[in-house]
Length: 427
Image: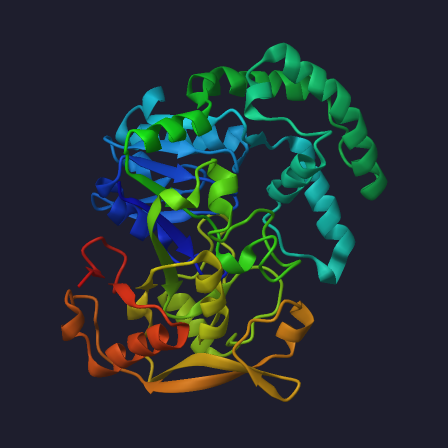
């Protein structure tokens, strides 16, 4: 059995979707195991561009089963809208080819209202969330009392009982934080979400049992990460993180499948670094080079359209993500974005309080004062988008890729030189 995991090693948006799409035909099942509709993949398939959020990239392949597992939080409206867009372009998706965990938690309107109130209250210290209720849904999951799972959603009596308990409490919280906010109606939410439940019911099942049987039957699983290691709730740049384990540490908890079944862990990195929202970013470029990278790489959010913060490649942060997730090899993406630069830089260490270190700090205040120590590589000033063999890359492009692998300590197996599938160097 050959099962694979694809993990982003930075702050997300590493172009994981392309790697998942490339690997999907070699697998039987693609598993999305964390996050919500705050994460997105852009995938070019059969010459067409698809922007996926909740749906695994495997949904574009007719012979593959796509699983949305236990660790995902689901906004039913967003999910059905996304599924409808796929069905309009590619035809229907049979229920046996798309499975949703009955243990996955559901996002409700009060989650989004709470999140907006929390962010507004923090003012200049706001985390910079996508305002989609992801974090507040995970908060209820951890708190247990006010959580509703997909298995509850599809049972009308249970759903109504849970909403009767939860919504009055949520109204009190929201009104206390944002006086004058819209009062949420139990009946209105129940009616709306009952409609979603009717459409979702055929897809909802015990995905954990399904995946355990798949492992026993030697099916090939592909685990599709969302966000990136540095946004992990436990191991990332807390509190400027997402609300789930977005590193490889989340595979077992999010899917119910042991990491022991995975034979290969692929760590995906951009050839530079980006970040969305608040939080320290040692290699950030607030200048014309940063803007050049943003525009050339189209560094605007798949889901939100927000401009991403851009900077040089940070091997300290990325190496930490690689060790955290236990990767075997690296995939370096968007190398072509750097084609026009005179020189490129890799951060190989930090200076914090006068001390040089290659350890990624746990405290964001230490990260905020970290001064990057760079290794400079001359640019290649050549269009590499048509190159298909590693040996044909310009000498300086090879030096840059080799520097990334050397500093992080893992071999670079895949190099992407453009958005299309064929613009991938695999040798």
